Amino acid sequence: MTDRVIVEADGGSRGNPGPAGYGAVVKDAATGEVLAERHEYLGIATNNVAEYSGLVAGLAAAAELGASTVDVRMDSKLVVEQMSGRWKIKHAALQPLAAQAREIAAGFDRVGYTWIPRAENSHADRLANVAMDSAGSGATAPAPAKAKAKVVEPDRVSPAGWTGALGTPTKLLLLRHGQTEMSVDRRYSGRGDVPLTEHGRGQAAAAAKRLAAMPGLIGEDGEPAPIVASPLIRTKQTAQAVADALGGRVETHPGLIETDFGEWEGLTFGEAAKRDPELHRCWLSDSSCPPPGGESFDAVHERVGKARRDLVERYDGRTVVVVSHVTPIKTLLRMGLDAGPSLLFRLHLDLASLSIVEFYPDGNASVRLVNDISHLS
Image (cartoon, rainbow, N blue to C red; front, top):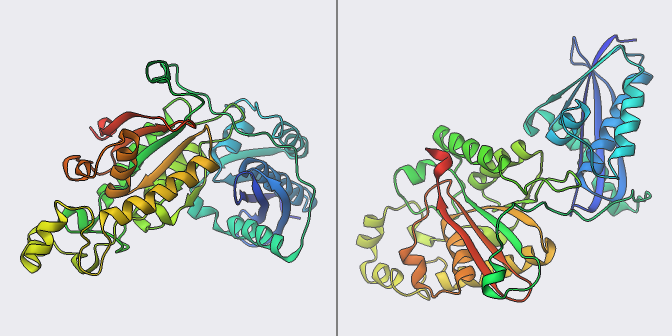
């Protein structure tokens, strides 16, 4: 018997809703020794249902061990805030799971809930992924009740009344990544996988705080807005700061990756111009002209266009946080404005800046914000 234990729990869904599973681990609070592990595939469910299921399993395992004091540690801000009583539980699918968790928790002398960064919850996260991976081996489980997330929109006038746009738009909150060593030196930084600097991490945290305070990022069902990032580390680090602030999870989309600058990767503007003067001049005025061994802006436009269609189809009528790079974000704004390629050469986007574009189901669009860096001041 161990009097005091730590429960680390997590859950995930590949699609939200999608194939879901949870993981939970119970550790001795004094020694860190692993006392119990739990994981299970849930069928089709949301992230939050999976996270709550992990909590229930972890508390049950702690009760089986005879613990009297339990410290719950999770990277889901939603679950931690709701179980601590600071947030209401509105989603019908989460209410019975929360009630079950409270019933188990009532058998302990004390239960505390602490939010931790996802990196500190890697054991439970790994178990949740083991559970989700089991879906491919034929594992089955009844799918819990679920409801499509409905995002609460800000109390602002819709532009649809002035443009004639019909239907509920898919709103993309376009966040550029924070500073890297390459951006400090103003070097072409495309597919090179460089991390954020310390200052860049601070920019990401400031942007995350800004987004967490915006209305519409948490739905009526308690689901945070989807967070989709380019697969490069600088965007994933920026997106993870947002996920930590919202209690969400980062997904990646290869179509959101930065332009491939080919042989210019790592060069400054002047170095590239000196190396390939005629090609560099062409590249600055002609969107069909690629860098040597790289990708033209026309190719980027086609790639990002496919990514936009994927996002709009998948998250129809919702708000989505998109964390990407300067060229893909400019391209999405260009699509929203129905503008020509010259926009790419005339629009400036700062690091960690926020832009907003809405795409309507009838083909209309509305750009609501461009290059906002008020959160960095």
